[in-house]
Image 1 (cartoon, rainbow, N blue to C red):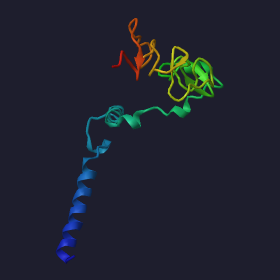
Image 2: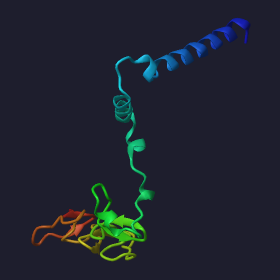
Image 3: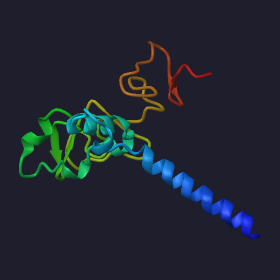
Image 4: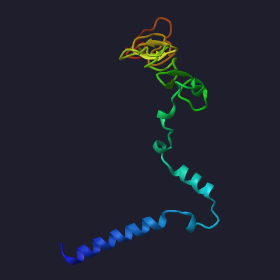
Length: 141
C-alpha cells in the first residue's frame, strides 16, 4: 500500500470514531433531560434479547409464592424453577414427569399431536367426528 492509501484509511477510521462518539447521548450534551427519561429512552432502544429478565433468578425452592407473581413462567415450583405443570413438557402434571420425544403436554397429559384426535397438531385441536389425525392434520389425504 502506498502512503496516500494509509492516510486515507487512518482518516476514515478517525472520522467514523468521531461520529460514533458524538452521536452517543449523555447528560452533559442534552440540556433539560432528566436522568430518568434518559434511562427510559435507553430501555426502549434495547433489543428484545437484552430486555429479557434472567430466568436464573426465579428460584422458588425457598419461596414458592414467587411463582404466582406477575410475569412468572408458571405457578408451580419444580426443581427450583417456576413452571406450569399443565403445559411444561419436562414437568407434565407432576414435577419430573417428562413427555416422550414426539409428545407435548396438554392439560397435564402427554399426548402425540401427530396422531391424537383430541389434540391434532396442538393442544385442544379436536378433529370432527369420523376424522382421523395423521401428521398433525385432521382428515389428511
